[in-house]
Image (cartoon, rainbow, N blue to C red; front, side):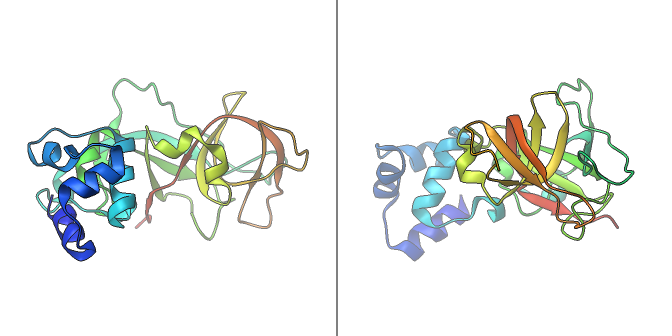
Length: 209
């Protein structure tokens, strides 16, 4: 709540007015103060109004190192026609995932929506390296609009079930529902005209020690 209160003061706007701008009624921030957390989408809209970066909003009342989030496994940084590379992918349905420390750069009150995967491979070097840990929101609102993620690094699930971390680009084909997937390491070619079932933007990275 402290980060919201600071933003209200900096913007010179009342809690009721900010709530109304975000969701169309004036009770949103009051509900948060009373411990009733809204949906992810409503939080993002409120933060847009207040100028708070969701990726780096920290809940002052929780120590990040005390919060654990599920580590679902590995995500491949390989791709079609790539050099030899390990190509393991995470399993979102894992019933008993390992846990890892939540990063200090994610909104802790949404900790139940955060998950982590570990990079396996080098096609996204130097931005992401083998062994780095990536964090995403499983219900990230931008997932509903792939156009909003053009140029962003995402955990991408293809129709065939393969899952990669890639930068999303417009397709060569120009067809709806197809996308190009860019590897940042020039040794890996562009994966062209791929059909996706899901793309979740990377919200935080913790480097391999």
